[in-house]
Amino acid sequence: MSGLSAALVQALHAVVGDAGLIRDAERMQTYLSDWRNAYRGCAALVLRPASTEEVAAVVRLCAEAGVALVPQGGNTGLCGGSIPDDSGEQVVLSLTRMTAIREVDTGNETITVEAGVILQRLQEAAAEVGRLFPLSLGAEGSCTVGGNLATNAGGTAVLRYGNMRELTLGLEVVLPDGRIWHGLRGLRKDNTGYDLKQLFIGAEGTLGIITAAVLKLYPAPRSCNTAWVALADVAAAISLIGRMRQLCGDRLTGFELMSRQSLDFVVRHVPGCNDPFAQVHPWYVLIELSDTQVDAGLDALLESGLGEAFEEGLVVDAVIASSEAQVAALWALREGISEAQNHEGPSLKHDISVPVSCIPAFIETTDQALLAYLPGVRIVAYGHVGDGNLHYNLSKPPGYADADFKDQQAALMQIIYDATARCAGSISAEHGLGQAKREAAEHYKDPLERELMRTIKQALDPQGLMNPGKVL
Ligand code: FAD
Ligand code: 2HG
Ligand code: ZN
Image (cartoon, rainbow, N blue to C red; front, top):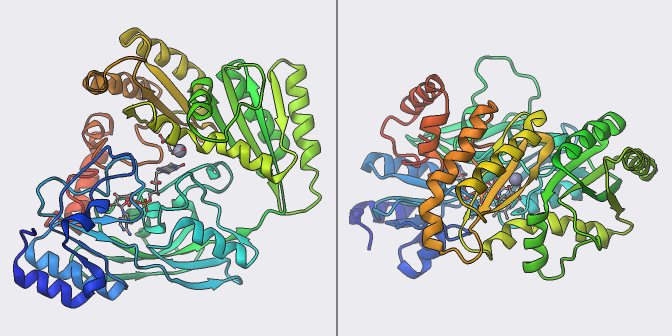
């Protein structure tokens, strides 16, 4: 039962009504643990406001009562950012009832959507007017625009289109005191001072509640070619991406790296997924080219790029998809990795980034260090290699106890983060800090940058009620 005063609960209920307030312990459960069940918390209440005005009213009431809020979208985040602590005193503020597509402006090439819109619905709305909204990631069927913005989400098309920061023109935000910042501008140029929207993007709900956004639209591709390529080592992947960039320019829209271990897990656990090759290879890349022209000659480009690379021994084998079904089957191999790894017991996830040129040396030396520390640990390395962003994930050695693996996690994490720091990299390229990497950021992020972040937090949220215990 909630530890909030009866008067506050009554006032909150008056704002959001029966449909917007959950107190029943059973019904609250889905809001209290994440997709992997890696984080679990308690809450006094779950609130589900249906409009910006309702969000503003509940934030104001909670601010006056000194009650902390945990914003939540689709709850697909991988760092526990949307999960309350275990005090039972925090309130989860779910944006999932704010699902309006407020405006589509094809003249300005923008779409204005509310925070609870599911990413896939946004992609569909863009397609309905012959446009592309390019953010694409494995959780797109359940993650929300608010969560995408709050984590500055990336995904598989960042190489060509950038991440959420680059896709956003304006924001509407409810500030920690309940005031509404009406920043829903569709301007591509605005030099009137600080770019405030960028403060809230990637803030993981620690500075305010994002309620709506103006996002960029792009021309819809009318041709697309996809290849699955086997490689002898990671250095070949880096050479190949350089070559494909030179050859294809902006038509190179995806370039995803996967280790054999990643593919093994997918083939083992995801129904319908099969290895495209008869032989086993240590590394693979999934390449996608796209163009707004129907006859853009993408087949010829892909064939000539891969053909030359094959002649030079850079590429060991390759298959080019010849149907929509094959394209989907190849992407399923890539997108299935997260789910597949879940079947192998507790996983230690990373989303580090290093300069692209450092990736081969990073993987080689870090693999060695990890295997020396914990022989048999399974390294599930894959990711958005063109962005320098690796999911350098670990699964326990076969036969190892879950509890023993959890005991080793801090040491394993330190090996990876120290190696990342030696390459002048980042401990989080796309998933954010949440509660998972908050402490590590204290150690690995520049102290002056941390101090500036605290100054901003203090200025906007002096009571510390916006998602406490996350990021800072
Ligand atoms: P949630 O998980 O609900 O919340 C995430 C964070 O945002 C929390 O800190 C929360 O408090 C805050 N938040 C949510 N809504 C708001 C709001 N309206 N205002 C303020 N703060 C808010 N991420 C990538 O970047 N790239 C990927 O390729 C990728 N692939 C994934 C694949 C799978 C299978 C899964 C499970 C996750 C993946 N993710 C990826 C991580 C996750 O999907 C993204 O971070 C997503 O953007 C989170 O959206 P969400 O609505 O689920 O947010
Ligand atoms: C991806 O690129 C996501 O597939 C998820 O960022 C990564 O599950 C993960 O570790
Ligand atoms: Zn990713």
